[in-house]
Image (cartoon, rainbow, N blue to C red; front, side, top):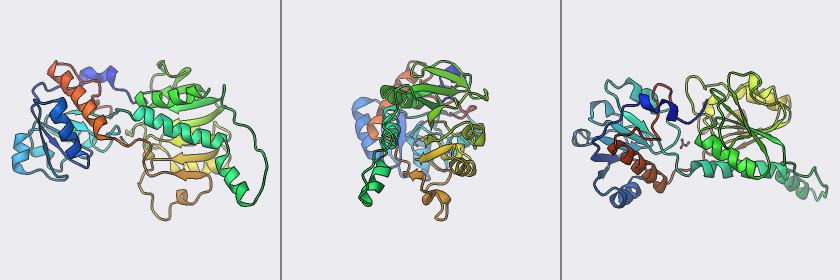
Length: 326
Ligand code: GLV
């Protein structure tokens, strides 16, 4: 449980000769414009989402977008760069292709953006913003407990780049940060770390629990009562992937007081079905998958760094291990 890939990067196949790139999705025009400046010897073409034309299929050796082209199998594409950080939708398709395709991803400024998103919600709760609005509505003037963050424990599931961004933001306001990853290896942004397999990995005194995990068969539904029942009155924030959380367990944990509130930026189905309990539960805050939105500059920076690595014969630092899924 760690969204870094470096220790497995040597398993990845790295194509060297990359000259022709197809660029799809909403950021395509801006990405191509910037690439002309940053990587002038890379030919880049904007293509529509969905299926590629036969001519594009035969022309390109690389592709970037938020989704894969439907007919990637018939192409000569050897490198796909994901415009986002979470690659769970792409990995199963690429794994089934008969030839190796390198997958890299965009992290860019997301650790900082997601750190700020988490901090915003943590501070809002610590300062009782919602309760004071309610008091104001009924002309009530009553002080609630002052915010207490210095020395309080915040636990972050996943200690990769995004987890570290979250930990850095929380540390900045005084939290002691505890990270949970696969092996329990230490990471600089965290006061301490523990292995996910350790049943005591999540400290019971965590005031805040943040999930940054990628979605893989191993993490799917992995955050449930075994984690929540360790806590008392904690704030839970999900900025990883929705399907890593067992939503029924989350509901129970709110009811039993293990959690006092859940902030969900990601859900197993987005948007959730109209009758889903999360819409109108008073202890749930929903945001529409906005904690970090990729911009063209993030994509270009990640893509050009990967290209530089490839041309130098190195496996890019942002390569995804397809076997591991992140
Ligand atoms: C957003 O969810 C991303 O994966 O970048």
